[in-house]
Image (tube, rainbow, N blue to C red; front, top):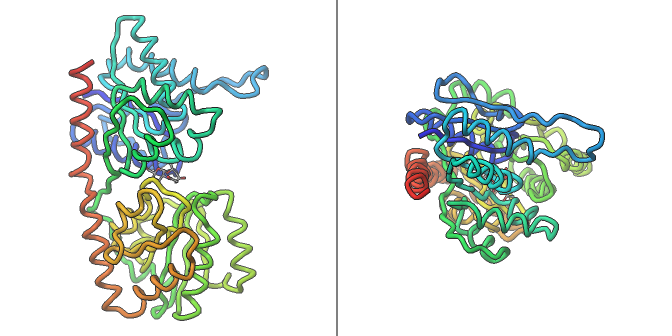
Amino acid sequence: MKIAIVCYPTFGGSGVVATELGLELAHRGHEIHFITYRQPVRLALLNPNVHYHEVNVPEYPLFHYQPYELALSSKLVDMVKLYKIDVLHVHYAIPHAYAGYMAKQMLKDEGITIPMVTTLHGTDITLVGNHPFYKPAVTFSINKSDVVTSVSQSLKDDTLRLFDIKNEIVVIPNFIELDNKITENIHCKRSVMARQEERIVTHISNFRKVKNIPDVVKVFYKIQQKIPAKLMMVGDGPEKEEAEKLCQELGISDKVIFFGNSHEINQILSYSDLFLLPSETESFGLAALEAMACHVPVISSNSGGLPEVNIHGVSGYLSDVGDVDDMAENALAILKDDTTLQQFKENALNTAKQFSIEKIVPLYEGLYTKAIQES
Ligand code: GMT
């Protein structure tokens, strides 16, 4: 199939999922066309089946806001015609599903029918899309999609609760490539970050409010009071500076490393003992799955789709949002001795295996085939 994928090119989970999906589909012989405003961060173009088309938005001083949706829908029309694309897969409803619908309408005018699959990722529903200023357009574009998928049952439930949706929503969970996750020379790298006797605790996110970053620091503060430990903070975003200040106030700056955005996620996770994700809400928690695939147990909140990914008492533990004491207690229960930690590490990997890329990607292929046949 010839598949156009529209996504955000940034470090956010939806862009990562879209990129990994496209690469796997290309690996399985499909022709993939990524259409977005910048080359996605995890996109390697060394594959003849992978193409990237940049959406350019010319700056014009009259516009306070440059019309990205317009440029995107025009680009979609051009690329569908030029490459004879069979199916359009848009990741994150805003504004991609809206632009996709407009492209479909323009193409229809020229006698071309193309089905559109929309994947809902989380904040496009729970935080942003739900805003009254966006809600009618988001509802409309979800209802006008030929196929709608959500990355967890929890997100499906939220979508049906918050919007007036007439379409069926198919749950297809996020996935992970399990091969080659653990990097060579772990011990060599590890010694740069922590001493032999120190446990390594890691958090990876875009440092937005929804991630509850102060709780990451507070949980770690309690852990390091009981056992020798270091905290790796990976990623960048608006809450990072406050977190650095909090570490200073608590007197733990020498035990915390702020990496910023990193392309070495697997390496960092390879020498981690525990992953913290105390988010206010999380439709799925791809970062937690990435950690589990690297044998790292997870301490997370129990909100949104997290209980579908992190299994309480198996791959880690779940606590109520904001319950820092419970999270720290659970963390210490995992880290207290090598035997327990080893057991949780194995459990984390086994849980991650349920989300292997080989199991999940065929579900998307099935939906594309059906959508093309029915269009
Ligand atoms: O978490 C973010 O802020 C990024 C956001 C995105 O859209 O890129 O992530 C959402 O999609 C991910 C991939 O499906 C999910 O794993 C995240 O849980 C979800 N984030 C939230 O729901 C807050």
